[in-house]
Image (cartoon, rainbow over all chains, first blue to last red; front, side, top):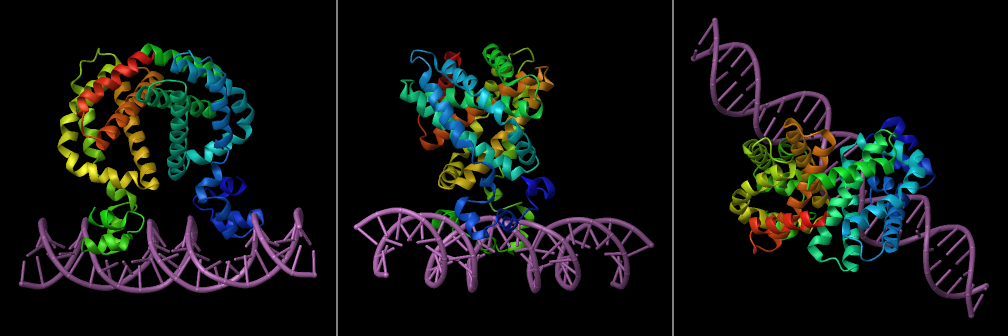
Length: 168
Length: 168
DNA sequence: TAGCTGTATGTCAGTGACTGACAAGGGGTG
DNA sequence: CACCCCTTGTCAGTCACTGACATACAGCTA
């Protein structure tokens, strides 16, 4: 983040990152599949949090309710991480290649959510659509919230869910 | 597509593509921003078709109806293009880097749709959510249809729209 | 016709992301 | 102590992509 803030992502070489961390470039690429991946490590904990949150929701809840409850339950985690995720998001917003990667990550997350829904008895197609919709709303909300802290995440989620329901 | 079918996308060098087209590698990169872009040229016509289709829908239609009417109206175009898009999709499905690019393209398309909705008086947040939701359903449908031709696009769209409406 | 201009292409050298193969160190276990 | 596993370093190589410069060709004008 130091280097990215100073020179931008594209103008920071992998060798520089590695040197800044006190290792070789080769070692860097053994820890991260590629240069972009260095910014997307926390995804795993978010995925775990969402999956276990889904497990807490009563099984008879409708799919979208299940998802939104899970989203709400990880809000504190995201709020706590804001000091790290805000500058990170600034770098991503300035770099198209990173936006591509970010979309890939949220897509993977959506697939995981779809799998969780299917595991709770939601039919396949509907689970996929629900997960994609829920995830795109969630990503939209968190993105807007990272741009501007107020209103908070849960309030934004409420509004987005309202918008979503009135759309149909 | 010949080369990609034979050796796969990753194992086909840009120099080979260029040579196969009878030009230099440098010339290749003057026509396409990067190697992946060579597979995503048709997006512009789809965008135009969708935007003009949106223009045909009466202005007082609710946002999601507007989008789904537009989607339905481009189905013939997609069905006509199937001979080209099916092998193309096979290459994309086999190459994560291409899936990333594809998601970026559909995201750009969703933003364009959101802009069109806003131009029709839909408030900003709702337009963004509607466009993302519509687009993700549309992408999901076309993806499934490219994997298996039957049932057809419009029928799949009907079912997906049903799934979507019953989710709420 | 000769000259001028703009645009598409070729050539070349260079940077930087990433990879495979091999060697070297260091800690735990028998 | 010998052995093994895991991490790291080293090195050479491939390939995507870029900037600078030269060249060819088409159309327009004097």
